[in-house]
Amino acid sequence: MKPIKITETVLRDAHQSLAATRMSTQQMLPKLELFDQAGYFALEMWGGATFDSALRFLNEDPWDRLRTIRKVVKNTKLMMLLRGQNILGYKHYPDDVVREFVRLSVKNGIDIIRVFDALNDLRNVKVSMEATKEYGAHSQGSISYTTSPVHNVDLYVNLALELQKMGADSLCIKDMSGLLLPYEGEKLVKAIKAEVDLPLEVHSHMTSGLADMLYIKCIEAGADIVDTALAPFAMGTSQPPTESLVMTLQGTPYDTQMDMEVLLELGSYFRQLKNQFVEDKTISPLVLGVDIQALWYQVPGGMLSNLVSQMNIQNTLEKLPEVLEEIPKVRKELGYPPLVTPTSQLVGAQAVINVMGATRYSMIPTEVRNYVKGMYGRPPAPIDEDIKKLVLGNEEAITVRPADLLEPALPRLKEELGDYYRTQEDLLSYALFPQVALNYFKNRP
Image (cartoon, rainbow, N blue to C red; front, side, top):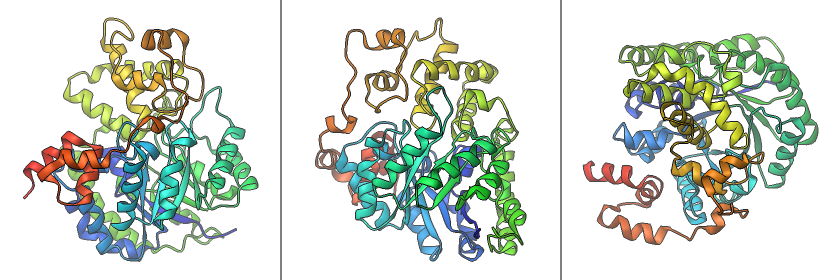
């Protein structure tokens, strides 16, 4: 038995899940120094959708956010979420872009890079994990958890063993949709810990109302670290509350040794911020409750908050229940991909089209075509033959690692960027989100 370590998600996943990633750096700044006094293992504060949202919606340079937080938070490890070969975008990028992005992330202040692939195709995390180690950061290999006829404990243990062989410094069970049942979690943690001698972190969401119970069972089974969010940005589609877990473990062999007074002060500040988001409708009541049906439709927190936001703008929110029912059907037809960016977006987009269109698959987005073609990697199960025929016709899907087909891109991109290039970080922003970054560059001081 040992003290449990806590990774705080309020600066990234918590507001991505509840507020469509709209928290600005300025809103984070007033209490940042307190995070160093609380006793956290790490702050998960970059990556995921923060990069895109900063440029697209907040008129911020995401690299500035990283540097600003690093300058204030001097002692607590800073963690980011990286989508392997997708980096932070929605397609695969060439190896030179991946390596340079990792180098600059570490240079600007990241300590831990949590790397995952949406399909658990480990060919897609190899380069980013190698680069993380090469540039001196902690490489956390992640398993995207889902349930389906082809996903089971043995599969996840084998993935953990492979990640260990690939040089992971720690492992993460990434339960992005809150699907992992507490006793299943206990079984999975015990099975992984029996085979792999690495620190194990558990990440889940309260979408289905299970994650706090899951954490207790996983802690008792041997998990080393869990992800939580300060109470104002916890629950709903976010993580379990930090303060509640710290109090639960107080005085036990798992005591986190964290400073509750500091946590309460942080919570008080972020409560004001949460209230603002509720008032201006950035946070929808639809993402704040418990929905046990999430176990069937498997929509992760960030995807649901964005889906609600987009359908609200389009005045089609009344169709949300139909879209949520359609998502599992599309997922099955596409070979049971875990629903996490980017597969959650492409499955969600196809589900919306299927509900809104005259017939199912009346239109097929480019991303879905690329997925069926194998451009995202190997699906966990075979894709429905009728869907494959509809999408590809007589064309064959690829079987190689998708990035093997991509030429190095940085010299060409630097030329394209021209006079807007100021720093190497600018080049990476442009590589990931060309039009969005360009719009930002044109309007910055």
